[in-house]
Image (cartoon, rainbow, N blue to C red; front, side, top):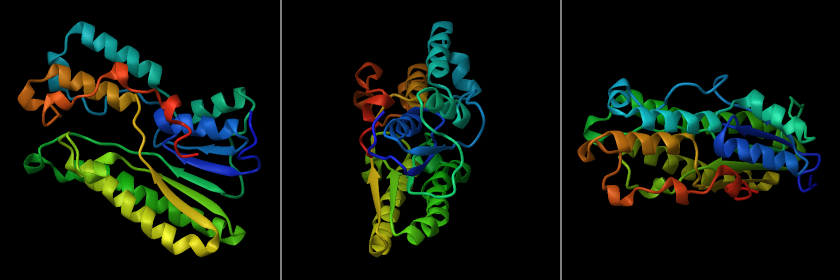
Length: 244
C-alpha cells in the first residue's frame, strides 16, 4: 500500500468492473478512501449482442465469450469487498476530494439507421452523467479549496473506425465539458482533466464476438482491417495509472 492519496476520499463511477474497477483499486492501494459505484447490481447478460446475433454464433464462440464475461464481471459491491480484502477502505464518507467519472456505454449502428434510443442511451451516460456527478461533487471541493476531477473519454471524440457516431459525440462532449470545468474551477484549487484509456473489458469481448458472428456488411467496423486483437490489448490493470 502506498500513501500518494492518503486521507483523500475518491468517488469512482463505473467501478464495478473493467477500467473503473482497476482505477478504484489503484486509488485504494495509494491510500484513498474509495466510494465505488455502478448502475446496477451484478453484470449478467449481454449489452451488444441481440438474439439474432446469438443465434448465428457457434457453441464454441458462446462458451468462450461467456467465460470471458464471467471473469470480467463485477459490481460496486464486489469491488468494495476486493478493496477491503487488500486493506483499503471502501464505504461512504462525508467529503469528496477526487471524482473519477469512468462509467460509459456504446452501441453500433450506421448513422442513417441509428435510433434515438441508442443515441440517448449513450449520451445520457456521458457527458450528461458526468455533468450530474460533477455538479454535486464540486460544492464539497469548493468549500475545501481543493479537488481533482477525472473524466474518461476516448480517442473516438475525433471520429472513429467503428460505426458508433453516438459514442464519438458523447466523448467529444466529455472533452468539451472537461475544458469548461477546468477553466471555471481553477481559481478554487480544483483541476479537471480527461484521460483516454484502451483496455480489454467486457465491451471488448462482446465487440469481438459480435464481429465474428456477423457478415462483413453487418460488422461494427467500417473496415475490418482496423479491428484490434484481444491478445494485443492491455488489461484494465495495465492502464490504471493513466489518470493518476
